[in-house]
Image (tube, rainbow, N blue to C red; front, side):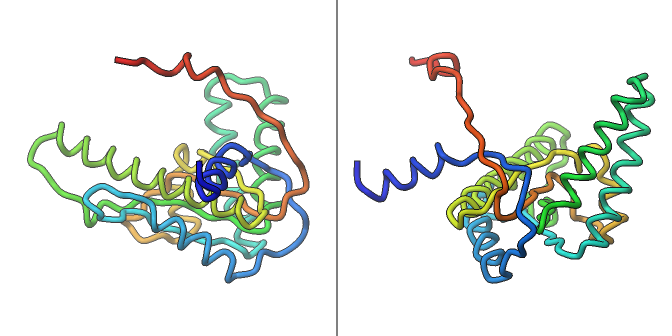
Length: 203
């Protein structure tokens, strides 16, 4: 194994989802380099369907967190979740969003993807775009790790895409997929994985 390969494997295996950050700004040139790594992900037909919104302004973070929290509270109440559990969940989400120095909203756009007359291929094309955007997100997480930054992917925008779109005034074709919190870490975590055999078939 070459030194280059060893560095890549170590980066993949040492990265952790970190949610607590120092009160320290992330330089814009580093954010740009992280996003640049994101757009070098592979994509279906090389159409590059990813779109990114960088949020650094505290007022915007708070507005987004409040709007998403309102929707979360409504959804959990409809599920008949106990009020104390709802408030704890909403509060945790609000704190994670507002305390991160940087948020990167990861979106997809279908404008450059292929179109088909049938539902099956149309659905598959959408899945291909989602997969492409997810790979860009992984590149962003690994790039952040390479700059000794902590980051965490939140799926919450999937549950309130209309709220996110309205709050951030997104273009009509930008579909929210995930929210990456980013900053210099104020925590460390250890994590394990199942044995490889649990997930692999050899044929």
